[in-house]
Image 1 (cartoon, each protein chain N blue to C red):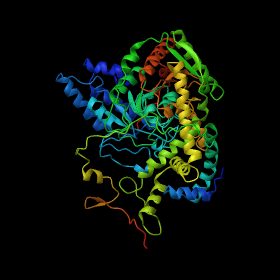
Image 2: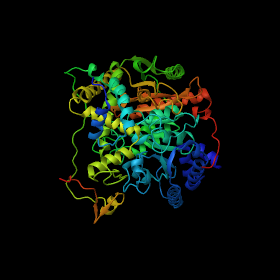
Image 3: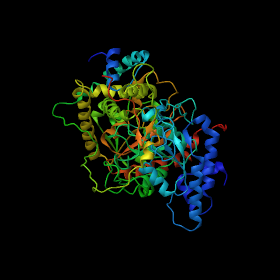
Image 4: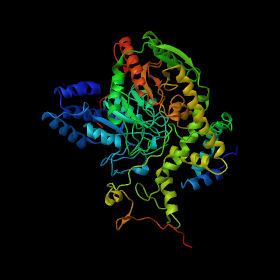
Length: 504
Length: 98
């Protein structure tokens, strides 16, 4: 099978080919490494490519399979990992210059699980610095470009993982989602991304942004592939005190379920309408109609406090981030910068290091968070934001009494141009308006492509489910994806233009 | 709402231990003014009787058995340190001159 054919396969199909002995993991892994070499100079999805290590894992899997050993279903299928997840022996930067060249001394739990299942790790993907952003333009190492149009953003913060999957550089990737960083990049790149229930995937080894919001999850080209990866990384971890003790619902079975008859699908009134591009709305409405044709009962739900979600989020996140990022102080790891003049004290080294090592958005949010938590402002800002969080949870509870899942467009617009929103932080924050409520309430969400907007760019369809009911995302997503493929004669991503092959 | 002066940004940046250039102070003052104005509306949404939520899923504290487990070898922990000496992190002076 040719390289080009291998890189177009889904993870599920690659797993089947590997299990049948029709291809080797070395072939599959090399094909993806070749593809990275050919297109990543233009896309810049990767900050680090681990050729030798990925091939060594692939060879080991092939050898074990040859002895007849029973392996994990995805053994030998390569994967890319967002560079905010620590990988022992592979550099991890969180997209920040302050961590340039840092090689973690341990693996995140989810990385341990990937290694135990035998997935070769192709490399580490680009992101907005410490996952703060919606466009990957805030990376300390230059932006990632959208494979649909290299002049446009791939979303953020996980633009690298989404672009890697969309550009066929990897069949699977790991993302993290604090306010939409898995789902919004999926939306603007025509791929699938899932934010599991808070605590559904261990946070041990994620470089924390906002600890009460962060959640790692799968990035892929199909709903089933996300389910397969979710199963590998999900489940209880004693090293994460917020890890859910319950077993993961059967997400793979749910992806195969194939039926939504009688399921109540709630359209969230506050997450559609004027603020959404007309082409986005049209695609969303067509997808809802497909679910209705498949037998789902469409209901209208209202979540009035969502109007305050963005404001609450941009107080809670900076507050938590300002605390979490205090550890980047130039003492134990990462950059250390000494002040140009005056005494060299620890305090002054910290300030010089952080001034030199953090980018604009990290500084903006740390200072905003410090301000929101400071004396005299705490109650009005942080205290009120935490109360809004209660209101949002109540809205979700009321909505899920009327509907089994909720749906909305994932993002208000399709991919915008690089640079378009860099000078206006508030306009950038508005990209997350539909994804943030799920993080504030800890519930699971999925984005899958619903088609193209009138500008020819992909549109994301968001599905939300109650906490611990991640399987419902896959059930509804699987049915919608199948209906769309039937209508289109292929996946939405097949409409993306071919990337020019240039050696990086 | 207090307006964001460059002095105010400098005060908060000092609390956050971030050195900023004069141009950065200027730009951040304008940006933070806009952002704080947008987010301060949270206070109009809630009343005194609304309970605060700090965490999305109700949780109890988790303890493990009080037994010794392997920990990171000191040399691994020190491997990425900007400076180390005698198996310890080497840091600039903590206390002032006086």
